[in-house]
Each structure stands twice: as C-alpha cells, then as structure tokens.
Image (cartoon, rainbow, N blue to C red; front, top):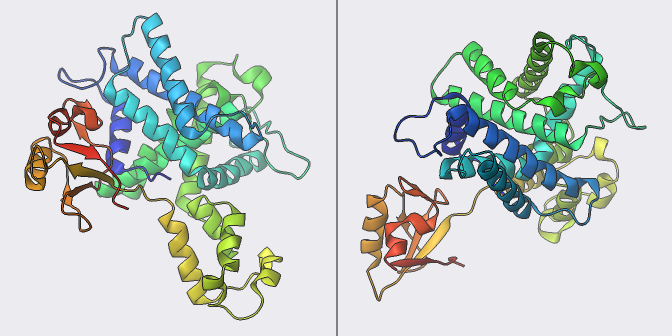
Length: 361
C-alpha cells in the first residue's frame, strides 16, 4: 500500500495551480490543459478501481485500472491535438489514483461524515438530494465518490504543505478548500438536485462546490475517529475489520490479553483491549501503509557499489548502501525522478548497465 509523499503532492498541486515555466518537464500543453488531463485521468483510474468495491468481480486491480486510464488519456490527448502526456502528468495521475485507492477506507470514512453533515444541514444552496440506503447509509455514485475522495486527498496534501511552510490555520484552511474544489466536477455536483443544478448558473454551481469543499475541509480539521479501538484503526489505516480480527485472534497477540478475545470481538461497541495488545495492533496496522524501499543490485562486472552510489548522487537520487548485502543499494524515496524523467530507465547508471532492481529479502 502507498503513502503518498509530500513531494509528489507538491507536483500535483503545481500542475493544478501554477503556470508552466519554459523548462518545465510537463508536456507542451498549457498548464490549464495539463491540470484538466490530470484530473480527468485520475478520476477515470479511480472509478475503474472502485468498481471492485461494488462487487464487480471483473473490475481491474488498482495498478491495472491506472494502466487502462493512462492508455485512454494518452489516446484522448493525441486525438485532441494536445500532445502526449508528459512524465510529470503521468506521475501526478499515478500518485493521485493509487494514493486514494490504497487509503480509500480512510477517505470514505471522512467522506461519509462530511456528506452526512451536508445532508443534515442547509449549506448547499439548492438543498441536498443525497440518496440513502435502507440502512441509512449514503449511496454515492462511483464517479461522484471518486471526485470527492480525490478532493479529500488534495485537501489533506494542502494542509500538510501549509504546515511545512508554517502557515496560519486560516491560510491552511483556504489552501485546502481551494485544492479540494479543483477536483469537484459535474459528478459531485450531481449529488445535489441533479435535475436542475447542472443547468443552473455558474454562480450557483460555484456555491455548491464551495459548500462541498468546506464540508470536506471541516471533516479533516475535526480529526474525529470512531471511539471503538478496532473501528478507529480500520478507519485510520484503511484496513478491513476482518484483518484486524484475524490479528487479534492470532496466538502472539491473543496471548497478550486477558479473557476470551473472540467473545469480545462479537460486541465491537464494547470491545476492551489491553494496552499492549492495542499498541502491537496499531504498529501492525500502521506498517501496512508504508511504501517499501526500492532496492538495486550493483553489477560488479561493470562497477563497484560506491561507483553506483556516486552515479545515483550525480542524478540527484537519494541512495543508501544496504546493510544486508555488499552489493545492495536502497532508494528510500521509491521510484526515482530525474531531470530526464521518472523511473529507473532514465538513470544514467541503468543505461550503463551498472545495476538492476532486486529485492533485499
């Protein structure tokens, strides 16, 4: 599972808001067109992926959904004369779609709370028309769900970037709301009085986008999680409850508690966990959302490990020697990005045959 880095989030926000400089690595298309292509392809990839949540057995995995969406976006870009997708565009699409796909349990929790508050209030000018299931849960069309989840992700990234720049809470809130609003398209608007809203004035549509984005930002600011420990971990780390139950019932963790864990698990609202059990469970859950380091093996027929490290440093790639192998090199930031583009194939060391990708274990 992926945990999106703030660096790539900055690239995405740059695509959405900043002009293209003369030497930028985007395609030749204007920044506005590039941002539109990023948004459209990201939503397409996420919609394809979310269909797996809707019991569509034939729906693709997240990685396959991304490949299909990139292929469709590339074809569309060539047809409309905008040129091929640039490396930065492809990276932004991949990061947006895969980040949300990996943490959609967390984002779904926030989204349900945010839209629930809108349904109960009167913040939307035309009045909410959110469909509810028989159980009272929000039933959100897939495209609208994708747009809203991507909006939440953008707002969360904007909050993180504002914190890194030591901006005030008010400034961070404005930046987060603007970032979220960029992702709310017609599908999200259709959640509210869809028969009339899409035909209404631009001012009314802007008001709805503002209300939606502010509801999403409020949910991020509240930072509220379920009170029950397992439910909280499920929401925070985007994990299915059955997995945490399996861990709790496993011998190493079950032996840390007192009493019959399976009995307590039958009453989630009243579940009582020991402090040691909870800390171990939280560490396990947190570990599932970290990106593994990319590992290279030096080709000693061509170079030494130190020469490989020097070549990577010359390309601006952070690299560390492996502690498990005399030939291994770790790339802790994952997929490398250079001035020539992203991916191993754009490294000078790779082109020279100095290394190959190989897991440590």
